[in-house]
Length: 262
Image (cartoon, rainbow, N blue to C red; front, side):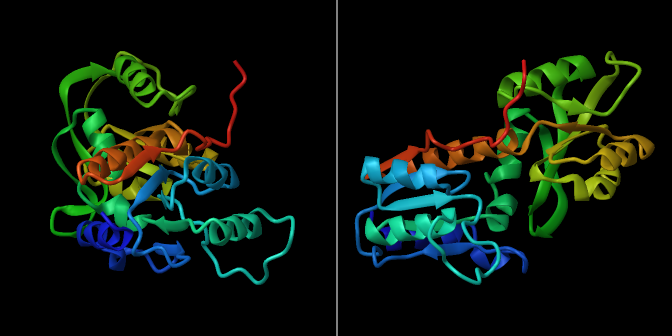
């Protein structure tokens, strides 16, 4: 499949017009590769390490969740990571394409994958944006779990080294209804309350957002940005493999950007 056809297929599924006004979805770098057979490296974040990996693997497209460019740069200067990524992309004819807030909303995007990992049933969006789609998911656990069991399950399934969660007096509390949102989802706490979820799994939560969730009766769980979104990248690789691309692989150089002291 040619790169142009792959992008058409993807945008039919996850329309870039759904992208938020502050976001930057779609082509970040397109060095004239649309007529080439797609050799795709999928990643969460298009870093310098990822493009060096793409060069070594002879990939011609980096398909990322996080945008390379969020805000229009005022300059490109030697020694800056963005400049070097752009230089290498054009020098080696590697395109960089981003699916961010459109991929968050779509079926089998970041939110749905999290819900499926937890085997949530009767799932619906936390914030609907169009028919059946939207930001985050909320649903019922297949079997009621204690909070302790749920925390353990999340840690195992997401391979998250550490979880941060709201203080609670009873880890034996029974949990049946859970909301999830991959990436930075603390701004949706008030919307989650309206769903009657007992637990909200997301990431990038601040001190006062844990206070807010406690005061609103929600158990907030922060599993980390990488841990909550990387599984969707793996799912995207599987979807691309079903298209019989010339070559597709999940990046091994994606980084969490955080290290935990044991």
